[in-house]
Length: 270
Image (tube, rainbow, N blue to C red; front, side, top):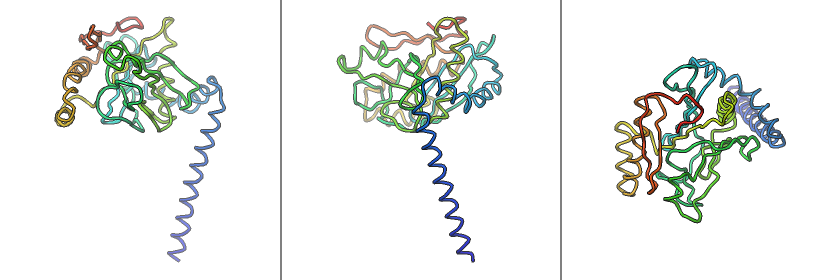
């Protein structure tokens, strides 16, 4: 009798798994046929209340400014926001990055499979992506254009849905829906285009875990030491102030970070 019950239980579990897989496959095929507007409507029905609850839990009714930080080693992307007359950003959500490619260090050429590292911005919204929804990152930026392959630096780096990647940051469909809606809603609050900074770090750059990781990586790739030393002030400044620092690029492509104690009043950070 016990064996029969066990067999029936396994069959039921298998049925649930098969049904879930079929349901997910149906949802994928259904959204692929949707226009961008239809996908956004679908995303708002499925994920709009969830991201709204996250903002309210952080004490923000409507986001005025938004900021993203990604950590390659930990496989995480953070959404921060500033609301009302607040002076410091608050953490709204931490999304797991569901797949990774490449290794620690910056992206320097097309086809290297690297996720970039550095200080970037969201430069486009794509509601009809091959990966459900996607947010474009402005790689190559001013620094990359100096330091990367002059002919073939690579391009089309996105935060997107699904769980596969070659150099991008996939959050799964529900993850990208929440993030996309959050950024779109913040954009709508401005008549001018909202600048959305994206800081991508090799890891969380503090504590013993970071120091151990840094030593290990620099031992095999010494050139990372100088590059990561440029990123460190950007990480430290936000950890200290919870205000996005001002970042510029020198003629040699090196990043220059200036700590700020107050967020900008307008939609731009520079």
